[in-house]
Length: 76
Image 1 (cartoon, rainbow, N blue to C red):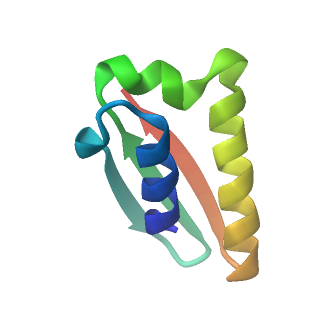
Image 2 (cartoon, rainbow, N blue to C red):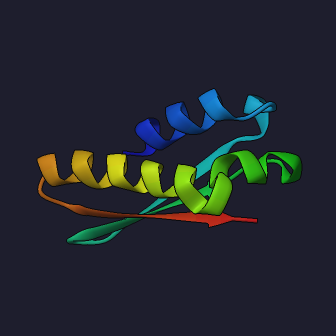
Image 3 (cartoon, rainbow, N blue to C red):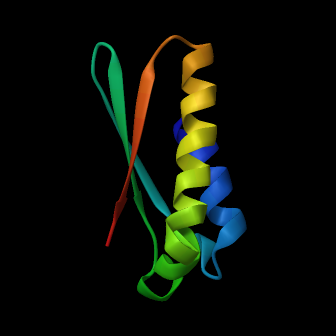
């Protein structure tokens, strides 16, 4: 899941070298923290949060396949 978020985020931002992804794994749920450059934050969130919502939907679909729950948190 971490690699999936990293791939999507790097494709969206202007500074892909500053993208950081951390995964905190639990038994049923894993929390994926995404941190990008300050000026790329708007590109990750998108208008009215549409891009972030789309990323969360893709992550949810992929994590359902491995029978786990994943939560995406975007850190400023």
